[in-house]
Length: 390
Image (cartoon, helix red, strand yellow):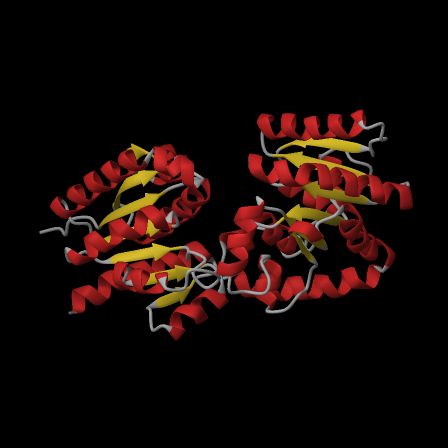
């Protein structure tokens, strides 16, 4: 009698998790083509073969107020998923990121005897470290994107496996700057600075104006410098253009700013240097081997709380991965146009700095290039084979 197909419960809460999930499903199906995946999935996971019981966008909520407004709905979805999986137990349940939602579900399923895996560590190593106890109670295996995360869990004796980062697999070790410029119709014979003030409204609220003013400061000192700004969507473009209008209304001359819809990775590849908001963009810039300055601003009360909760000296991923300050980080009141401009100008005036960074970035890239989807699939399938041997 033929064995029934392997069944996987799987939940992703936003686009980045959907991308990871799509790669993971494809990697598992290479071993088990008839494997069944169901839970909450986005378009990448659905295309790979997952059945989504609820729309993924119902989980994609940012901010305390927004979460509170949807709290009852989110609890209801989690309750229905828990009931479904308890009545139809999968061989493994996989929670991808979205820890506030998935870890609670994982705990319920693990208590019910279902094996659980969590893919993408919360920033527990940086703040609210006591959460590690909840994580240990919720998941049988943590899959991390970065090696320093795995070291943290090992310290607390939580089963963990570093699988690498999919971006490191997809971005080549060497990126053709001139080809990227030709693709974007940018000049091939001048210096270019990319400005990435973030993809969220609150990031542009705090960073759009300082970034534009930084470009003004730099153009006064390096007149041939070109500035290119990729913007995540129509709303962010309107927001950035409003900041430009406000500066112009003060009687100030705007620098030469080329605005681009999306294509942030292509813009960074085309640039000589990047000024960006802290986040995944810093990881992408590092993998593209582009020197960068990282800036971030928060609401004053949020920053006051964060300073008391965060346990790490650096906030950007290049510095965290290097365990030293490779690139400048200017946070809150330090992120002034003059401070940012001076750090950026140093790259253009000292090209040897760029060469040194390129080698460090390449070393980190190779560390992260582990064929993440295959590694994650192997780790999850081992959970099933180990269970079969017990």
